[in-house]
Length: 108
Image 1 (cartoon, rainbow, N blue to C red):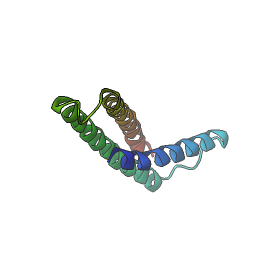
Image 2 (cartoon, one colour):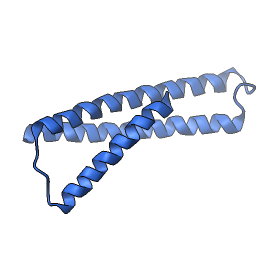
Image 3 (cartoon, helix red, strand yellow):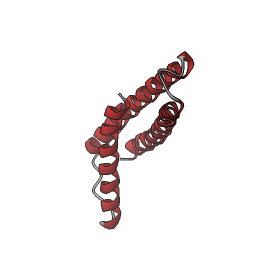
């Protein structure tokens, strides 16, 4: 679940970063409301998918830690917990980007 969502979020974020870098070198691309609307909608969708994946990873990790150590050795559980923490951090940054893009939409 988490790997699938992050497999969608990563290329999307990299492509937006490349477009932003290109627009800085070209001194701005023409702003089109429809393109920005698509970016905002896809950002919102991926942000919520990222939140769902982070929550499901955290709940499964919590369940495995509380059940017993036979299902989840300490080293593996620590990796799951780190993955959940990074997923929440990724969601937070993605949501901040989404809100910033949403604030840009009325300015066009």
